[in-house]
Amino acid sequence: MSTLVLDNGAYFAKIGYSHEKVSVIPNCQFRSKTSRLKTFTANQLDEIKDPSGLFYILPFQKGYLVNWDVQRKVWDHLFGKEMFKVDFADTNIVITEPYFNFSSIQESMNEILFEDYQFQSVLRVNAGSLSAHRYFHENNSELCCIVVDSGFSSTHIVPYCRGRKMKEGICRINVGGKLLTNHLKEIISYRQLHVMDETYVINQVKEDVCYVSQDFYKDMEISQLKGEDNTVVTEYVLPDFSSIKKGFCKPREEMNFTGKYKTGEQVLRLTNERFAVPEMLFHPSDIGIQEMGIPEALVHSINNMPEEMQPHFYKNIVLTGGSALFPGYRDRVYKEVRALAPVEYEVSVVLPLNPVCYPWEGGKLLAENPDFEELVVTREDYEENGHYVCEEKFDV
Amino acid sequence: MAEKKIAVRSQDPNQRRVLDSATRQRRLTRQLDALEKDNFQDDPHASLPQLVKRLPQFDESNESGKRRKKTRGDHFKQRFRKNFQTLLEEEDLSVSEGPNYLTACAEPSKFPQRHFCAVCGFPSNYTCVSCGARYCCVRCLGTHHETRCLKWTV
Image (tube, rainbow over all chains, first blue to last red):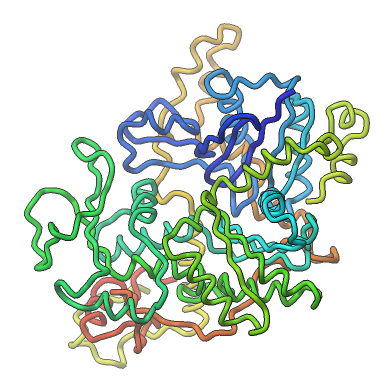
């Protein structure tokens, strides 16, 4: 009886058996201009020799699973012979879904997992619940924690108390990795080079070059300086997929401060984009989205909780999700929350070693938990009672 | 309605079209929605014919093969069923009580909005008279007028 843990994200699916390691695989299909006949699924991305102008087909829209055809194809590939070779009748599955998931999507998922794939038993949770479970497992004495999940579609801030999420405190900021990449594409396309089609390449640029600044205006001033004083500007060499397979930053010694390029490679010169793009997580109003940033929303969410619990929440802030990987993210969140929180409360922000796989690790721990059998819904249960039993048991 | 673009200095200030705030808001909403898109190019497989796939089916006659020669995009849309907006409306959240998807959305920030130059990205102090875009210096204003001002107007 093995358990498969699948953190079904809008961009990456983190999947693995609970007794093995996790694999991070893109949760979408790709189409390329060059190889016209084939549609690549999930990790077949490595087979594409020329990822320029890559066309993404994502099953998620705004964080919710709408396109079941694509999702089924990805799952078929993941559960099939090439990847995990799942023996459905003998496997439990722990699968994540978004907060406030729509009932129609929940029912579709039940149907597909039980009737299509025929898993032995299913546990549907929120990704944050798994993160909270992992956090409480390490810090046994803490009662409450608040999870900040900055993912692909949006950022969710969810308070947890004694393992249950507090629905009144859930806050969603509609800024996620997708928005940051699209914005970066727009500004590069306007200022330097037309890259609107190159989601894959610019995503790589964002991950390599962007960072969260600790002092925004000071960094702005530094990036306006000329010559050697400007420590912010970097030159990024774009891949051309024949000689240069992957883009990289030019080291400082080779950088050309006078602005004339000699070689034939395509180079992007990035100054304030480096820190202005992740700044959108903290100030969505920079771009016109009238919402609070992460630190403000954290404080707002905690203020919605009962008075006695508030100090406990401030002491246990956990950062997860792909956008938590920006350098300087944790320090900036700490600085801003410390400035906004009441002075008598202690503030502590935790960034795990691997924020992307943190919920998956929580799922792994949950699968090994002795109470696991009581949390799941087995196939016999579902066939007798239908959707009702899932609605009752899974608190989404 | 498109007016000819001529150099800024020779234009009489009275002749430049000025957008009102509703139009500016619409433009802004359009820009923000564009940021939510997955792909900015078209499906590279969209125009491929399906003829190759129809041949092995011996029980189906050739007419049904020809009739079904739709593009992949249509096929996808048929089975796509519902998109996010439809699902959200189906949930009918305004009548339900308690926290739900709509109430969980973050509120507007208490801090004032910061403005950045549309051309270079540094903090801006000035606004374009016609379209409301921000700029930081006269050089950026010139670039803005030549490239973007009032192009693709709603």
